[in-house]
Length: 324
Image 1 (cartoon, helix red, strand yellow):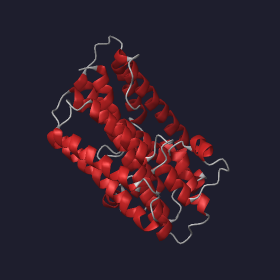
Image 2 (cartoon, rainbow, N blue to C red; image 1 turned 180 degrees about the horizontal axis):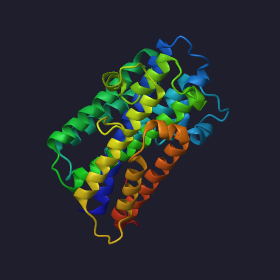
Image 3 (cartoon, rainbow, N blue to C red; image 1 turned 135 degrees about the vertical axis):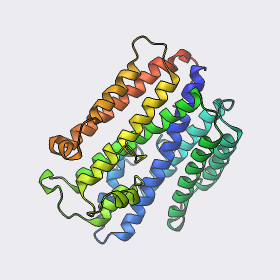
Image 4 (cartoon, one colour; image 1 turned 180 degrees about the vertical axis):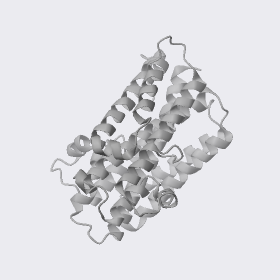
């Protein structure tokens, strides 16, 4: 398999996952503002999203006064072309990479993604009106889910499918870790407060932003507890947006692909990620420092991406790369 095709499939799935994550964050935040009784200042409600997507520097460049408002954040995260994490930019990147790899994805996948891009391109030419925002975000999430469904049911299993899984789960693990790190410490700045009653809507919003609210309620029956939230989204082997689930799926994907390297940096990094999660419990991680734990996890994810680039994608360096 050509390395440029492998990289395009990897980035196609990463950009699609990023599209879904961004729509999910915005939709849940809007709903939370409507449900919560103590919404507080507008900037306090929207600024955490900038930290989650590591977008402070780009936002400051686009809005020099630095003021964070709901309208600005929706523009920045939906249609801002200068923001590589916006829905517009991410979906455009997914389509361009899919175009490069058209002979390795199914016809149904390409048609669904191309149609999705045309729909979004038409919707975000002008500013979304408040009454259209939530419906638009739900549409984006539904289209990404449809694409994943078509991929699972129509894509030939092989190296291409494995790179698709690598991109999806690396991006998903990155977002899960960032959401938990930012929102957990915003809701619980003092570790002495572990287990204390906190605002139901805020913890519910954290779980909903990871599509984990219903899963949490089925598995835990003592109300929403911070330690149980960490247990679900970090250590669960069965929750599809947990860190453990993502690392397991990436490990399986690399095993399917194989490597010609005698010293496999990708394999070593995945082993370190697995070791970081093995034989640990939520209470131990929180006691020792959840932020430090998640920072180390994110650093290892960054190393994993760099190792994938070095071992699988660098054969075409010097050529014009597609959206990355």
